Length: 112
Length: 112
Image (cartoon, rainbow over all chains, first blue to last red; front, top):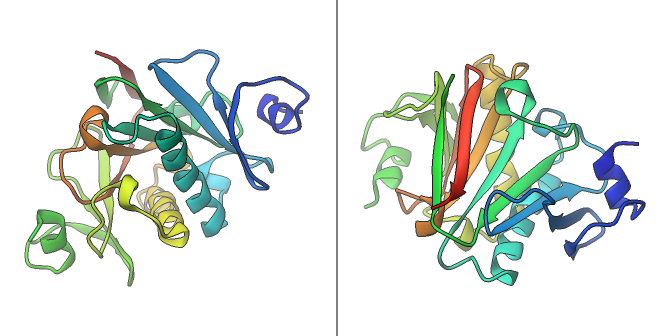
C-alpha cells in the first residue's frame, strides 16, 4: 500500500492538522518552510493527471486555504503547489498539495 | 480595472489557450519555463484567500490539467502553483494558477 494511503488509513502516524471524509492534511516530515503541510485525498489518486472529480479538486484547494488560516499564515501569504510527474518533481505517486508558508519565501523555478 | 479582468473581458490581448464561461487560460508574457500558462477566474477574485466556491476552485485545477494535456506536457509532468499574498510572492491581485512545464524543472523554495 502506498505511504500516503497508509497515512490516510492511520497505519502510519502523522501530525494531522485537518481531516474530513474526503481529504487529510498533515505536516511534511521534511519541511522546506516554517509551515509545510501536505493535503491528500483519502482515496488513492496518483496525481493531478488522474484527478477527474472537480469537487474533490476544489476541496484540496479550499482545505489548503483553511489550513493556512488555521496555522495563521493566511494573511502574510503562502504557496499552494502540486508537483505532477517526473518533470514536475513529484516524489510520491499519490496526489498531494503542498501548503508552504510561515516566512517570506524565496522561490526559483526554471527549466534545467 | 485590474489587468487580468481586462484580459478576461478581451480589452487587453492575450494568447488564449482555453476558455469557458468561468475561467480563461493564457500564456504568461514572461515565461519561466518552456510552457507557462496562467489560469484565471473570469470573475474578479483577489487570491486563494478570497476563493469560496469549491467548484470554481476545482475548475481552475482541472483546466490546468487540461491545458497540460492540450500542450502535450502532461505525460512528462508539470507544476501547478498558486502564489498567495506577499509571503507567497503573488504579483497580480487576481487569482491565477501557474501551469509550468515543457522541460525537467529545477525548483528551489525556501524561507528567506
